[in-house]
Length: 158
Ligand SMILES: [Zn+2]
Image 1 (cartoon, rainbow, N blue to C red):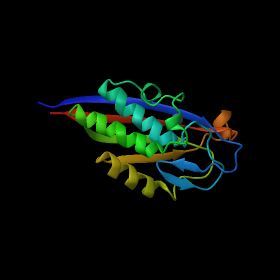
Image 2: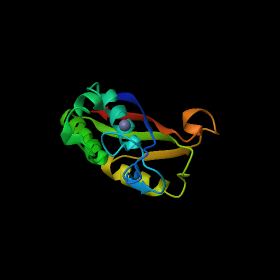
Image 3: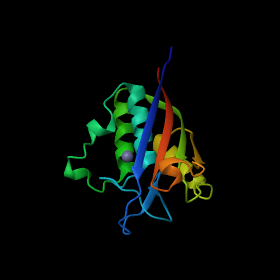
Image 4: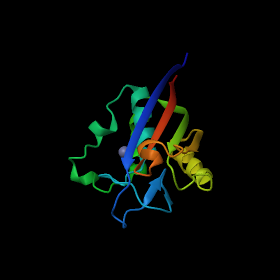
């Protein structure tokens, strides 16, 4: 009989004032100012990693890949996510599916959504759905100060 577990991930990053930083979501480079962070600030990769780790009952990414470790400076977060999938596989977990909300005022995600979903699905070897949402002008997201991401992941072990 299979065991199923669900996990939830959340992440938020402020927009950077450094015009050299790229906006990276799910490994896709989007137009516009980049997000600030120790790594490449790929909030979708971070929230997905945390959802998977939470489902498997493992430490979160802040503990696994600490900000204080300079080897993660400007790290490619899709590589971190790949490591997380490897950790789960070692423990016998398979990803069933992942569903994500990226809450960002601009740019609109619709033109990038398919690429992001394809890349994430390949990396996780499971269906990934990504929805772009706006905050309708409200709060720090609506004011364009930052962006957030919510992810749920289902994993199974037979
Ligand atoms: Zn993050």
